[in-house]
Amino acid sequence: MKILMTASEAVPFVKTGGLADAVSSLSAALAALGHEVRIVIPRYYGIDRKKLTKLEGAMGVPVGSGEEWCAVYTTRLPGTSGKKSSAENPVTVYFIDHEGFFGRDGIYGSHAEPDFLDNPRRFSFFCRSCFQLCRKIHWYPDVLHAHDWPAALVPVFLKYGERRGVSSEEGSFANTVSVLTIHNLGYQGIYSKDNFSCTGLGWDVFYDAGFDDWNMMNLLKAGINSAGRLNTVSPNYARETLTQAQGFRLDGPLNSRRADYSGILNGIDTVVWNPQTDKYLPAPYSAKDLGGKARAKAALQRRFGLKESAGLPLIGMIGRLAEQKGIGELFGPSYGSAWSICRDMDLQFAFLGSGEIWAENEVRSLASRLSNFKAHIGYSEEISHLIEGGADFFLMPSRYEPCGLNQMYSLAYGTLPIVRNTGGLADTVANYNQETGEGTGFMFDDLTPSAIYNTVGWAVWAWYNKPEDILAMRIRGMKQDFSWKKSAKQYLELYKSAGA
Image 1 (cartoon, helix red, strand yellow):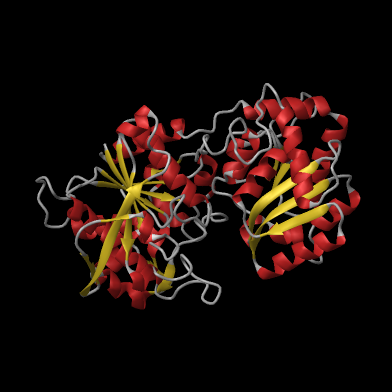
Image 2 (image 1 turned 90 degrees about the horizontal axis):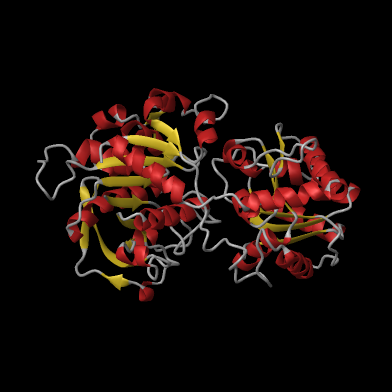
């Protein structure tokens, strides 16, 4: 099967969140199963052309009533050569190079302009370029797999443009099917409908495809109405998004496509995230020998300036300081629970992340006032691995979480998640039963400061009073399989159900 992944991000080239991890890891997993997979993303300012190979000739892309010209670069996805199965099916990555649209700081926006006003034109151009790329390289996929709102116009263009008036002969998209994966329904690409002209589609399509959203233009909504099949990144999140509470006003369109909508849990890259081979840890460890985890904890405490102590429970947290992540309830200056947790409980807390300015300032304030709370504002791959390996617990108080990756990294590293019962967190973490010792983490239902405080307190109680349960849960979590193998096979079934 020939599959083209169309996305705005892919690791290791550009990343703002889990979308980038999922696109590359899924592509590699499908290739390992014997399929021909290619990825296309924009070439942003931060992606060095010198490390890429330029395809010969410029490429014209229809935009509105005119045409934009661009270059195309290519390379191989790292990690897809070396093993026999991968070497036979290497993943090629294409980069659409247009300086005016993508040669700027920021992917979707910048500090000065959080959401670029020309995003509809930028990503309309990108989605159109995916079809032109196929023509340029004379390669027509069986499946066009679009990811999130920046690529949501791909199934729209396929249904309302590329299939109209084409024959079934080789060299067309007549037999190509489309799949749209929703990674986060909270981001939909909603802009003034004055931008619709940049798509080059007729106004009949504006209404037929369902772009109209309270007199605005909703890119994700149109993709939902147009794609052959839809899915999101965990079964529980799929159920949640069909409700008014979690549907972000798209529960109606999703319910209308209910028969074509499913949830497939993301996997994790078990090569990169593996405590037995992790280059960022001071020593390897496994479920059979946890000695290296104690060394990782000591290294983490030194790195953050915390007291070195094997006996103190250490809570780690990595994430964006955004409303979705429950930061108000945790770090709110007048009501957040972090201060009380660190003041009242005999524990340590290490935070890594960045985001909203008020939250960054509050985190810095907590770090300056509390000896057992330390933070690194920003992001570091090395520190993120050290937190996953060295922490005893990992806190994720998310308001909603489509899938979540950190809780799966944590389980693989023997770090017990403390999470809200929502989305993919509910699909991957089993709540602790203190009567039987079963479970792999600690869960709470209501997103309130007291719920976070009490659940952290519960985990700390188990640390001091049920050490045998803590050890058993660690080992149980580390033995779970969160690789992409199972999920990749589910995606293949999804492609087949769409007609591929």
